Structures are given as structure tokens and as C-alpha cells.
Length: 263
Image (tube, rainbow, N blue to C red; front, side, top):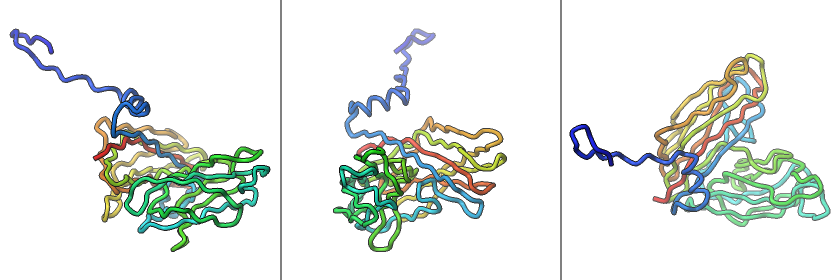
């Protein structure tokens, strides 16, 4: 509250917390019903033939339709539950159930052999290696493949210990607020360029472009685009980042930060 020129009282709105402080408060659990989330991904081989999603599996990520059991397996026999082994032993899976509520579970790997999830998932948005042998990392690519249609929903590339997928679906009973998205070119043609698109698909609708930013190996190879007024994303909406390139074999990473708020 301050005094105006005529002696009257002028009401001054409180200064909002910086995003960094807001994020810190949420991370510390000081704001009930709020959760912060970082989704980041990488596609190491994007070609000019068609736009590709930013995720470990490459190409187009196939959106889920119904809750499905997934088989978890590796391309290496060294990724198993043997404590004396060298590769990944256990993997924690994060996703949404048939009611689009958050759920997770941890499974013991069995090398090349499929291990089915206990839960059914409409979406798997993250997998993390929780324990490993002598190498401290997964020896092969670990995939989550839907039993009903053989769709690969998520993948941990060899040595990474975590999925890299800039894809997320807002859980039921929550609203997401996107505060920023970003992207970088790691490798490819010395004159290669890429448009990176932020797309959302509201429940029952099609993907819509909400923002496009450009990057180039010959110029600005990175962007970080904040939203001073965060984008409000309703429950069950799917968010993903897509890249279209001007040269083959482009390696691009990208991600977005959002805050989930209970409805």
C-alpha cells in the first residue's frame, strides 16, 4: 500500500514470486496440491523425410488408447536380476492407470525375456533403472511393449538408465501449467536447421501446435523459451515436442517444465 499524488491510498498488488522460488517451494512440499515436473527427451537420428517426436524410440510415438499390460525386456542378456551380473537389474515404471491416475511399480529384469507389468497403463511416461551390476548402467535398450498391439510405449537407451521422452499426459484431477520449453542440436549437418514444435492433444481431440522455435547448427543451436503467462493444460491432455529438420541424421534434445495443480 502506498500514498498517491493526491494523498489517496493506492493499492499495489504483491510482487509474484520468481519461478525459481516458486519451484523451490513446490519441490520442498510447501504448496499443497502442487507438483513440479521436468520432461526432457532426445532423438539422436532425425531425418528430413518426416517430423519426429523427441523420444528415445525415434520416429513417431504412438499415443495410447486403452490401459494395457506392457512387457519389459532388454536387447542385452546382461540386463537381468542377477546381483552378480553387469547390467541393469531393476526398473521402476511410472505412468497412468485405466482411470488416468498416477501409478508406478518396480520390476526385476530378465535379460532378453519379457517380464509383464503387474499394472495396466494407458501411458508410460518414464522408466528409471534403480539398480545395476558392475557397469552401473543398462547394457542394452530396455523397452516397454504393449501386449495387445506390440506398440513400444517407452525405451531406455543403452547406458542412459532413464527414458528420454519429451512426452507427457496430464493425469485425471489435475491441471498442468507449462512454464518453459527448450531444445538443442547436438550433432548433424554443419548447416542443418530444425523447427521444434510444442503440441498438445486435449482429450478426444487432435494434436494442436502451441509454439514453434527454430535452431541451427550454423547459428543458434539452442533456445530456451519461457512463458511469463504459463500455458494451462487440462486433465488428460497429451503434450509432446516434435522436430522437423533440413538435413538427415540430426541429433536433437528438448524438454518442457510444468507444474501440476490439483483441480
